[in-house]
Length: 334
Image (cartoon, rainbow, N blue to C red; front, side, top):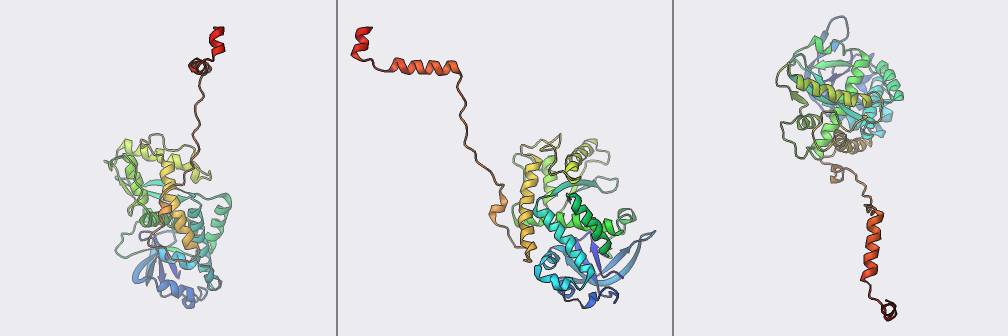
């Protein structure tokens, strides 16, 4: 049985108590015990891969990702990681998520939940070619399944295609990046758009990307305007998520705010990058980020004076000549 599962709804890891002895001695791993000490005992349903959505009830401990990250990223954990192939793969994946966030390589994507009016705006990692190859290798080493709490309704449509190794690995990677951005906004400064009402699309999107809840609601399931705005936003970030450094345009086509979406994203990611830098050293997430992380770095260049037209310049020089007092010799010559 898999000893560690990812709980998407809670952005947490579930560590089962009844891990088998074939799991590389995971039950006796000191690092695993340290992780379990950070969580709370609970029951969960392990979603297992197969032709149908099978599950198995298990008891164990659920630990939030923000508490797991400093432990698995701590350089001092290397000896304990070497004892477990599963923990080593998990540490590499979470370190990759921290590194991607530290470099600001994340962009928003909006997804629809079912066929109703609910949409979620989340952050996704933008990986290079070599990082995608690393993810392919990690998906084979990471023996992880999904889990849900007993009071959560099982949805075969939602998780049927996400119980394979590679899909679980990408789901965990993107969830970690998304969590880091939101935790950074919580510990830093909440991002808002100046001059935009709370009901405007742009303000609603920003709130969904940095707040506790990523939910956005359309007025009706057939709201064509809302659907069009979603498609434009996803098209704007698609080129960056496919491997480009940044989106081709500063904002989506219909963006109405004075501040571009690239600028807003940079403000959020700058805070998340600082938080990731702290966690990568093995330190827990601070309660508050330095105020220097709240503002974008701006370079002040000296303002160039506009060049005067030649005719105006000649007239100004002539006025200066005329205003000078004349000498006695000049008066006599005149």
